[in-house]
Length: 85
Image 1 (cartoon, one colour):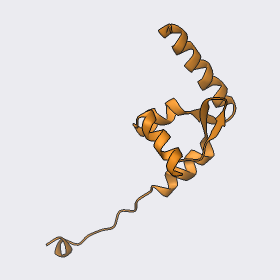
Image 2 (image 1 turned 90 degrees about the horizontal axis):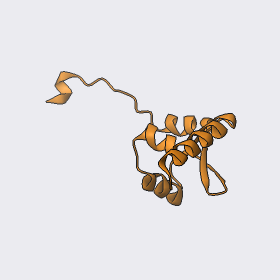
Image 3 (image 1 turned 30 degrees about the horizontal axis):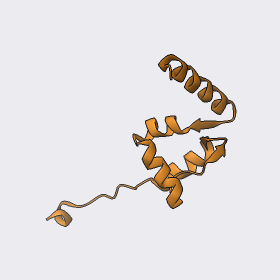
């Protein structure tokens, strides 16, 4: 397949996903710095953000992604020097 065509296809998918307030899987992988295989494993295990399967494309609604990210928030807890020793 032609690389230019692939890039154009991805741009079009991104544009369409954005119009639906979603991110395509490729953008999720870029954001999270994960491989597509990791996103697939999350889906199979019921982990990760909620998604929509449209044809053979996985789209991630931005609100679902935001909700998922909030589950990953870790609070910093102050530790006294005494507690570190």
